Length: 244
Image 1 (cartoon, helix red, strand yellow):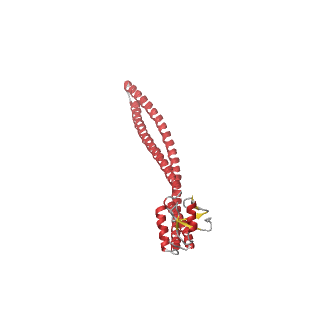
Image 2: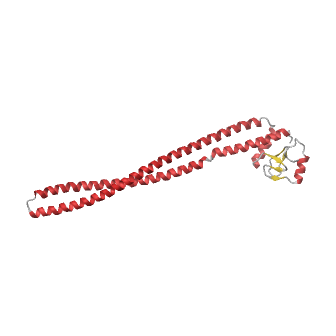
Image 3: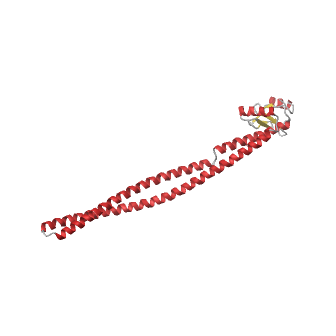
């Protein structure tokens, strides 16, 4: 195949665009910011689980507190009733029995009030812990929102870059011979590179130096001959830097 040297050099621009396009497409699909967003979501989920555990503990304490308060109320009512009966008792034996019952109820109430204080302290401690973890969770939610916004912004930017490259590529392809573009596309699809600059005897696509007989073949070729790089299988583009 023949192609003007200037057109062959334009293939390097096309390869550069395709390399940038692949990078932009990869960054659009997997932006670097996604890792930070995933970490933020993991931390948010951890704190959310902690908040759930603390809320459950608070609910258990509140339920126990209501039960103890109910028991204290019942005993207080019963105590008031028995104290009144004790005061009205006329029989000494009956009065003594009421005294023992009242004393027992007072001890029971004192014990329950002590438990009530302990449970109230636990409730207060868990309320404080829940407030703290909910504040932490709110901060984590904000961090997640910010991280996800950063991801969306990055995706949009990379997408815009990809579209811009596609437009620039279409313009460049329109300036090149169709058969040269077809060969470029074929080699790029098969081997990953469509064009490779020969710089000081080294193929840039593969980073491999051409052998002496390969360089002889390149030197012997006409300027408009389209050559294939022996190491990368891309179109080998000769420039003033090729060292020929």
